[in-house]
Picture 1 (cartoon, one colour):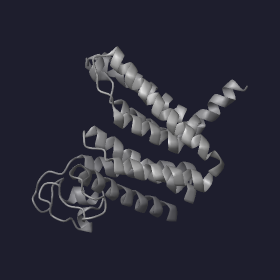
Picture 2: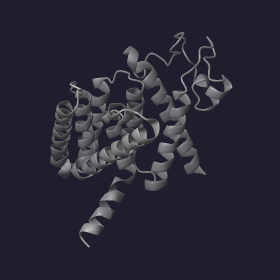
Picture 3: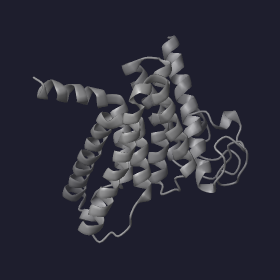
Picture 4: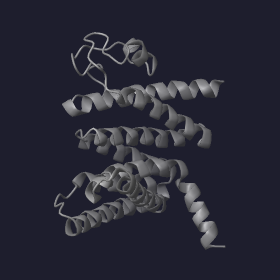
Length: 256
C-alpha cells in the first residue's frame, strides 16, 4: 500500500512538473517561477487546478477562469508520467540511484512532447540533464566516467554522420543541431553499450513506423518517418527500462 501511494504521489509530481515545463518553455518562462498559469488568460493556477486527471475532468477540459480549451496533452502527460513511474518502480524498485533514471526519464517525456508540438527546446534544459548525467556517473560509477565522456562524443559523431547522410540522400538540406545535442546527452547518460541499444531502438522504430505509414496511411517517404530526434528520445526511454535486458539477451546468444 505504501508503495502504491508513493508511485501515485511521484506520478502526480512528475505530471505537474511536466505540464508546467511544457507550457512555460515556449515563452521562455522559468520552470518553477513564476507560478504555473493558464496559457490563454495568464491567470495564476492554484494547486486545485493542477491535480492530474481530477482537475482536467472537473473543469471539463477547460480553463476554470476563462473557459478556454486546455490542450489534450495535459491528460496525456498525466497518463504517461504515471505509467513511467509505475513501470520503472515495478521493474527496479525504490533506490536513490534509480531516482536519477526516473528524473531523466521524466525529462525525456517532456522533450518528446515539446518536439511533437514543435516547440522550442531550450539549451538550458539539455545542460541541466547533462549535469544530471555527470552526477549519475560520478556518484555511482566514477571509474566509468571516461567511458561516458567517450560515449557522448560518439553519440554526437553518430548523429552528425546521420545528418550528413540525410542531406546527401534526400532533398532535405537542414542540419539538425538539436539531434546532435540529444545524441550527446543520451550517450553521456547511457554509456556506450546502452547508447548502442538506444540507437538500435531508434532505427528499428523509425523503420517500423515508416513502413506502417507508407503501407496503410499512404504517406510519402519523407512524411512517413517521425523526426529522428523524437525517435532517439523515445528510444532512450525504452532503453532505461529494457536496455540491460536486451544486452543480456544479446550476450547470451553471442557468447553461447
